[in-house]
Image 1 (cartoon, rainbow, N blue to C red):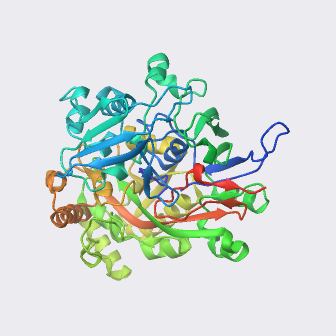
Image 2 (image 1 turned 60 degrees about the vertical axis):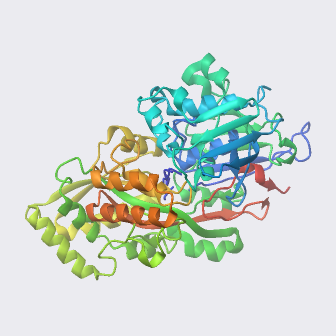
Image 3 (image 1 turned 90 degrees about the vertical axis):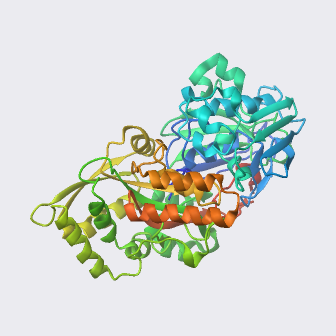
Length: 539
């Protein structure tokens, strides 16, 4: 999913969360009452789970809504509204049995029809869900989403109020992981029918997760409180959650050190060495399934010339970015698919850029030759605008890359937007030359990174890549049931991507966090998923 990093990422970071906590005990409240203030990289664009795309929104919705299955504290798959499920021998049909105590926050029971309605809604073209294609493994999903079939033809059914049956078009070994994503979350039909797009407003939003929405003031905070109708409410220790946007990681750090904040889900990279020294075990760093990259608008001249795209990539010193700009908290990235991912070719056979081991001086020489062949150089400068969302990390990276491009005769300017505006531009307006992006894996499978570049993926194909051979390989991989053969097809697709370079992979993420000793239940994991329902605060 986007990283604001990503989620879709960022996508991803990718994209990561800053978190703050304080404890409030009111005279009339239970002794265990606690408020957890979680800092984010920015505000959510929307709380409609069928229109979201970022890890910021994913974290919030993970607290408000519960799907058929969920991520547990370690990012494993656990029962949600479904208490159990079975899979047919051919790998195509999942049958979910729902718990009988699942309720919406207004007291309505959660039924199988809620999931049928929600999955049909996200696939209905009029919904405009940019992330609908994550659920394309469901039978007829793509045809419904593109208007070729009616929503009733989607492979989802409710034979009775307690049973959801989902039929796939082809086996997908990662399908249960897909259902932990926000696109698989249910929405309350009655609220949508009564309020339309305003169903996500605090006074209208009906949720079925551990929390319900209380208020949302953009650029200030989003507040939610524990839902007493939640089936596992007795096990939810934190009574109130406040999500606060922190686009500057240093601000969260200062509040942490002042004792005003109990945790930050991301820290200023340039301060990692001193943070580690000052805060010791309260600093967490862990591997993270994500890629930080620059999208090149290949539909805009002169970036439609592959020589220019390759030259830009060649001249970027990824080791410098990883070591100096991100203080060793990122890995140099020469592939779109991050290392360590499941269901792929062996690590030593995975595709990487063909100049990964070439000395920087030789790479710069090739970059100069390519730009000269394309008609640019020190005597005819190439003007490039780098767009990025406001953050000291992204600013520092963009400044360093501009300096790396300067010897090639490239003049760089910057366009800085807040998080929602930046990603709205990438997805919708597509008015940029080169733009920072990130993608955080929604599930551990290379398809979750490679699908970004499908020609018909209007929402996430930021580089506007259009290669029929790439699309064909991805389609064949989607039909292939042999995992080894599927992995080879996906690897061939990534090799084409790396050759054509519509998006420049730069780094692979790790997650960083500050976690107070007063906060319990925080489990480092490759997804950097930390649902509030599993956390608790000490007095």
